[in-house]
Image 1 (cartoon, one colour):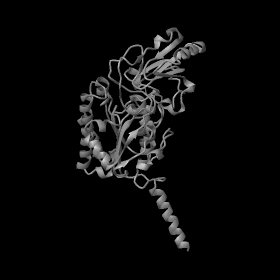
Image 2: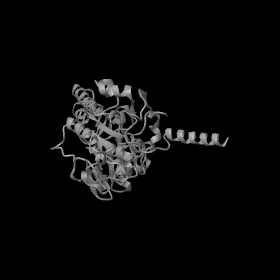
Image 3: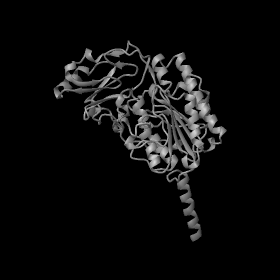
Image 4: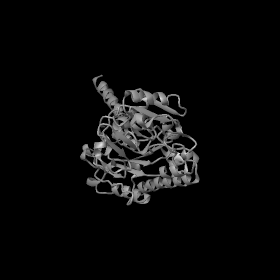
Length: 402
């Protein structure tokens, strides 16, 4: 009887481990790929044979971005597991009311590492003995907390690698001697975001761009297979946000309703942050904008909880968010596509594909929040995550054995 009880106890411990609640590091790789602005339904709209094959061979779903659904906030949310309200990058551009400094993803201070809060996945991995390699990712070249991934590239618009070279260099990193080989790799493509902005999501130009990026995923998969790496690599392909059509006809001009003198600063965009001069001006702004069609306006402390926004000094005391496809701006954008809207809008949700030894085959997964990618990858690598807003249990249904 004693022997039988010991056997049952050992069996229970084994089952506990298999089910993923305890995990030892495995000698396998994790590759995370982002295709900027790749809407979740582009594979239904356009030719994406590689992503279609990944869906048959692995896991597929539509992933929920964080608010606001824009590039820098969400790439850094993916890297840290922190929503933009907590990771410091609250929008592509913002005013830091404590530092009295304007930040822009296109400005010189975008590389100031002190703007970036939390711990990115490459730092988490390397702190625990796992080498990381990154081919372009927001903040990977900024030295967050004074640290870089072992392998990284400076994002210099005048000297960027071709897409093909990015893929090939990612494979090359995996072929290094074991002592120098990264087990965590990140790879970034800046399309189809740019093309979606210029021509709109429903355009032949975007269709061609989607197909090209899809072919790069094919190149990566073929490279893994050619070197026998596909059987020990968990490949995750996703995006930061979606895209929706916009038009000059769908514009709400803030200064048709509010007086500039009421504002100490206003950072226009989606959403817009308004810093009012005093409480009386705040009330005047709120009263003027309440009831205006096609926008939502809140005091920052009254923003709906599901948006996880409104606690950072980098957000105005009044937040204005336009309805899907509308712009809250003093002049119409020349773009035909835009993003930054609520994550609940289907047009803002992103593609997600994953395949490899840890993933089920042909599985349509439930939706999950993008901040859960960080703790989930930590689990795949067998490392402890830093504090984050994610929950890996949201993604566990896609794992074999669950």
